Length: 238
Length: 375
Image 1: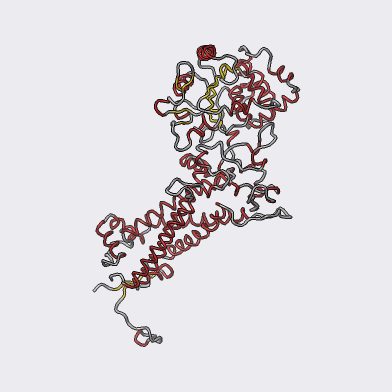
Image 2: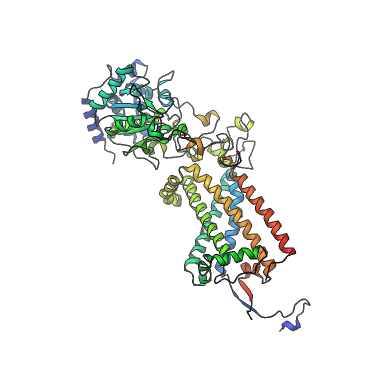
């Protein structure tokens, strides 16, 4: 078999010893990508619902045109997909045994020295700190906020959903929707906050993508690949 | 459960009480050109509006006939009298208007004959005579700042706040007529200099809110007739609005809803799309956020309503609508948030933050490429 020393491609050579293993389970990777795709689909359809950018000037000859209804349907389908992914990830974080390294980050999150060192790393003045868990303190708090925004957008989204679909799940959620409506002071405010949560998520996602790329470029440990293959590679500490 | 027998008993009891009008309501209706048949049709329609089976139509008619037995005290606080005007100032009086004119209205600033000290006396007498029996209707928000002194009424400069609390104490039922008394209305719009509030905020009794700017005659009379019929308050939603009127959104029963779902929107007033009767969502219709029955009941004897006339709903029966629904002729996506910039919509603020983040990221990436991070 192809030994590293007899690599067929000339740029391949033995590069020290790496530790490898599954960082992201299959379920984890699926929920990440379902969530990612849903977010972008929800942004596109959501902007349409907020202020329809494709409209018709003439009446349809047959009453079978349902553009707004169709885009709203996709918004709802992706919305429920995202809810599923967010719930899975929440349960994963708190209860799954594999998530113990994620949970270990809670301790790191309150370590101010560690947080300052992390800021120093991004300001290019200090080395990347060693963390107990998989998330550094900045990352942990950014993700915590992301989940605040997720649950904010889910709660407001379900309240808006229940007002349109009065039967089935919408009917079951109706008392909850009314509670949310009262909490926000009216359905208009529910709608306004739904939009604000979207922008908060857009901004976090934008920075998340940059940070992932940044760490892939400068970490040189295949970090970006992990969310596709699940494999994490780290240099052995000598 | 709906029990016609109980309702009949209650009406029989009310019938024993003295009425105020020299003529009975059925006589007055006849004088104004309404036949008995018209009246029964109206009763049937009101029964349906209240969510009652059609079999209730005759008892609704009876309730309307004894409505002059139920003493009503009408308080005017910080308001424009638009709610009273909407009921009273019509060229062809509707049955709603007439019923409203001939309920046992003990005190009403706008339409009572008495003035000055005499009016004050009537007021105090009514409170004493009908203690614990009168229905209190309140029009207008209640200013609460600085002890409520932004609204004083009468020769003793009694604050609206004090008068409201005093009158509410012995009321059998309290109905907040209009958005101002329900939620504060325009007086309560930011920055709310007088601390105006909906009356339920200063009372510790249940208040039925009948918001709208103005509410339709149907909803006001419907609520009063409900109290006459059942001797209790109607079922209410999360903002204490009667469910029979405010259970669904304007959007749910809108005649233009088909165009909304089709993606057919009016872009400009006076355009071809507007003539085609397309949806007014992009011209700021707030029907999707507003609970009311305008799209079903309409105004002025079911003649028309804003959306039919070609202007979107402005959400006038929702709490805080002066602030939450603005701008009225643009979708809520263009809601302006108070900030350093006067026209800061969520999208503008979001794009600004995103741009700043983008520039910072580009700079950080460029510097990192030249001076690598420490390993």
